[in-house]
Length: 223
Image 1: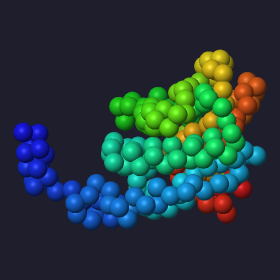
Image 2: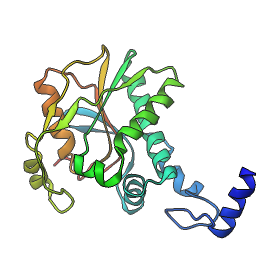
Image 3: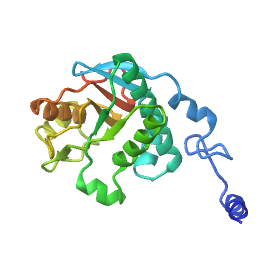
Image 4: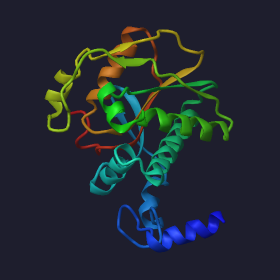
């Protein structure tokens, strides 16, 4: 019965790739491939940064569909990308279980508008994937936004840094034993990550690396 209903639904509302509009797929294989390869590596505020692909029109569209459109196929690709990068980080740095994943906090306004905590949902999926690969990880959302900030979308890098200055604090200073990794779905100017690094460093928490699905390329990131 379920298959029949699904088939009828697809007949009335056929699937199209959310990126290139190819019929028959939510995200076609060609559009999936850039999210499934070997992670890129860079430096951010002196920390190792791991990310799957550069920020461009296509990756921006997928991030937006996952974050604002609640698209499950898009969210799954992002969680796979971050999972793959975390695996590489753990392997290269020879980290020992457990791993603490600290996510960049969304504002209360954003969470209320979306009806969900996007980055927290992704973190839970990542932890399940890591567990299936014998990596014990905990969702450790100890960062919180403590003051109002302006919408960052139309601000340049310097304005974003000033906008987020001292905007984060720790709601809980205790961490489970183990390495701490900072995670976000997207890094453009790096202002949010820089503020998170400040807050964690002031609390004497050592960060082993930064992981994201998508980042602005080497020539533009954190100048």
